[in-house]
Length: 113
Ligand SMILES: O=C(O)C(=O)C[C@]1(C(=O)O)C=C[C@@H](O)C=C1
Picture 1: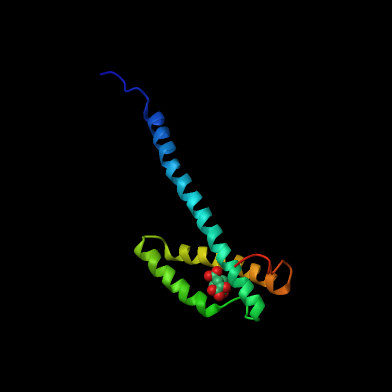
Picture 2: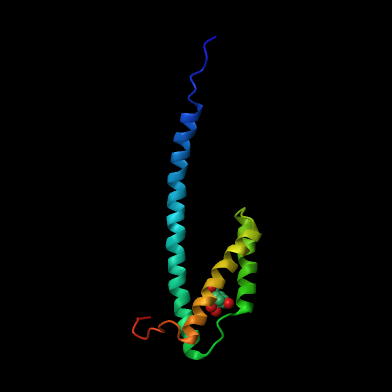
């Protein structure tokens, strides 16, 4: 009986490289989606700053977390992770809103809505 050539590692490396192409695409899509989300939340921040509304809206967050947890369950994603991700993003959004409200950054009337 002849020994198998040790191609297992090479095969696995080729498969890993192929899988990583899809991971690369997904990571790029996530960055694009986050960029779009922040463009919209910047509009919300300007609106809130201009009208004196508070930066955060805990009720909106509560409703959105419940919705996202349910979607995550259906998608076989850990709902706790979905909530953690949402809270991480929202904390950054609130920080941006607060900066707009205090005038730490341009409220940018010159930037078209
Ligand atoms: O919808 C709002 O009022 C927002 O400011 C956006 C957003 C979010 O990023 O989803 C951020 C902060 C609020 O606490 C709730 C939601």
